[in-house]
Image (tube, rainbow, N blue to C red; front, side):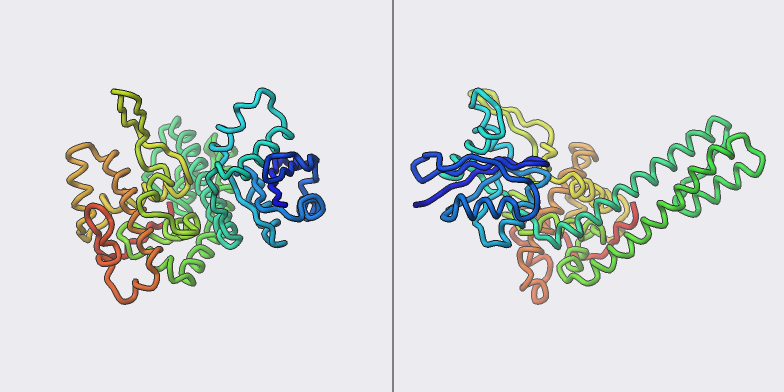
Length: 358
């Protein structure tokens, strides 16, 4: 007898519902959200489980790998699709949600979400931590600039050690704000040191990965963007959907005679979307070497404006990077133009322009 399982995961407990192939409830209960507890309960209560389903969430990746280690057939369901099905129930509870998820996996009315590998999750954690340090460093620099600007002290753009040296020279030894600014500069120095460690680790990871090095051949794409793309798109998607996956395609609202195309959806990974936008900015502004992609972006900027052109170029860069990832065996024997021949629109030429520290 086939069995189908729905799991509603929370921080402390996981609600479990087991149904048979006709939808009859065989078991309802709870297990602790701890390593080994859900798997032990499923082996006891659902030994013939055909599929085990749960929603995407903060603990979904851990649970997926936990159950896969013991050879259980698990699927991770898109939370938006699951919500559409579960919201028709009058009463909201963990038990009802687990029962609804069991019904979803039984009838097959769901969209499976690919879970990233453990290696990609680890590298993504490094990239996210580095991004947070960059944001903290920038906030401190802006705050210090704002404080000393009230005293008429201005200085040119600078980051890191150069920033601290300029501030120290402006304040001197007897400035009224010295006792306020000094602690901020100490924190700034410590943040810069930790960021430099992350930067070195990111460079080593990129240097050791052949796919990441090939992604860096696209103009405007540097170490951080290439490594982020490599481990966000862990399993290459369709080239036609990678833009939508990253939230770089416009929303559409069509009903009857109404058909409205709005702004980009901004769904998907925010960090990678930001880096792709920065890569497009680097390509259009800082890259000296000309390419058909840059020519297309500059022409588009004259027609619709630079801001929208950057978004379009960012989506195009994402499609090109996907083509490079999806054809690893042909990169050494064919040119980048041949690899990306299926990309709609212009095809960029090779060039190595590091993104640098942002």
